[in-house]
Amino acid sequence: FRSVSFRSPLCCLRSLRQWPRSMDAEHLFVKAIEDRDVNAILTEMRRDACTSDSVQQWGCDALFRVVQHNPAAAKEIVAYKGLHDVALALRRFPGNVDVANEGCTAVWRVVREGGFTAA
Image (cartoon, rainbow, N blue to C red; front, top):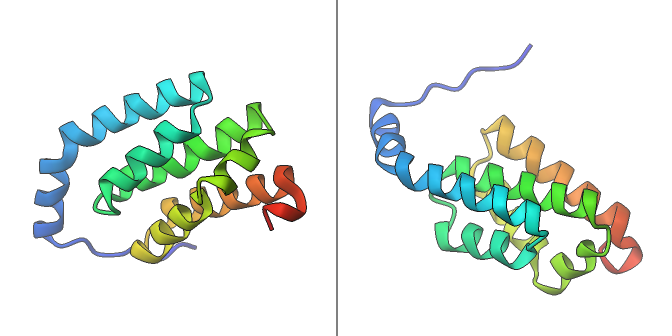
């Protein structure tokens, strides 16, 4: 059983205004996963500045997938302070189950592949 959070109409309007930009971000993340480009993922997450839950969710998922296909990228994420960006997303959207799921699995993957230095 999951609790359902109520989103105000104002929140929905903000989401609609961000929709085109969010779609661009989604395509950027897909390309970054293909290229295994950690820097592009983190740059987009930072550019968004935690204003869009979708962008942060996709960014966390992209980090997970890059490390899944290239375990050495875990050290790159740690070097670029990417875990800090994931933590910011988790703090900014505490009621969003999707951000929490993607953020936590990204941290798990980075720590699992990055070992002691990532932890």
